[in-house]
Image (cartoon, rainbow, N blue to C red):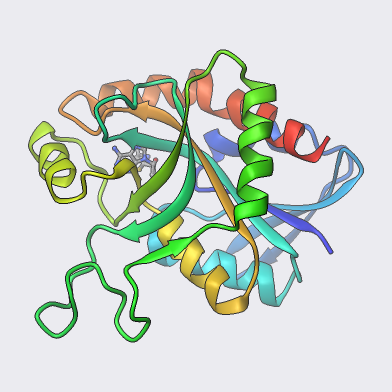
Length: 230
Ligand code: SAH
């Protein structure tokens, strides 16, 4: 059974695709899935596109059509907690949707009818991913914990402060992880996610973002994935 490697944007996955010698392209649900090998492991690599719905669709297709045994997400995120700086790496242990609010019927952040607001990543795969990060990027500062997802590029200091106040445990913010975590929970598929911090989700986020993704994110993802599958 193949393992899925997912990123939201092409810039995040380009270097991973370069490592696959034999990939063949298959289209499904308007996406291109690259099926092939990496370090001798069967891999399906795909761009989810940006946002929770796009990520959920991608994850469901990976499970149902490609029969993947696990999903690993690699990409960039905005740093939220004070010590989580540009260039640091965050391995998610749990995800929450910061823009989910069905209150007062359900508590703030709770996913209706699941009785929970957070989904955990797979502990064993997450440990393997964290040790791959340590081997691939020994100089990078590594954080593990809660990551918040929502359908917003958080790019004002005011919004970042509000998120930090509401969710003091959240290390980083991005736009896909919680959706993939929920789909993987539904299908009983192991999930792990790593994010390189591209910006601080503040008034400078947009400027930091473009430069960082171009120069750092893609090689980071490739080094981590290579170490994970080696
Ligand atoms: N393409 C646009 C923005 C991409 S959205 C641009 O060039 O400006 C940002 C992507 O990176 C999403 O896939 C999200 O998961 C992640 N991300 C990085 N920093 C983020 C932030 N501050 N807030 C939300 N998502 C962020």
